Length: 45
Image (cartoon, rainbow, N blue to C red; front, side, top):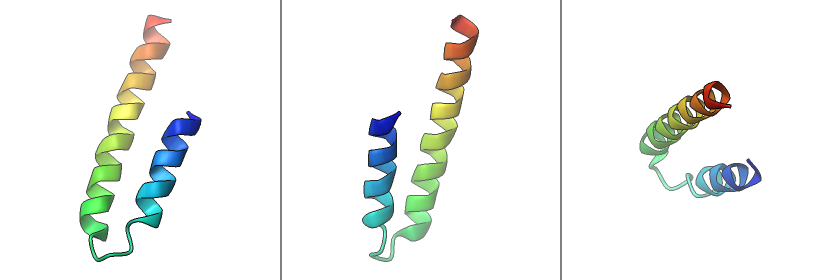
């Protein structure tokens, strides 16, 4: 999970160039994927 946190931190820090809507969409999709993967991992475990 620390790697994911670093990635999101970089995305947020790099998001001040007028692409915030696009960035929000990207983060939303990434979080949705992570959530699905986490749920599958829990079920599989």
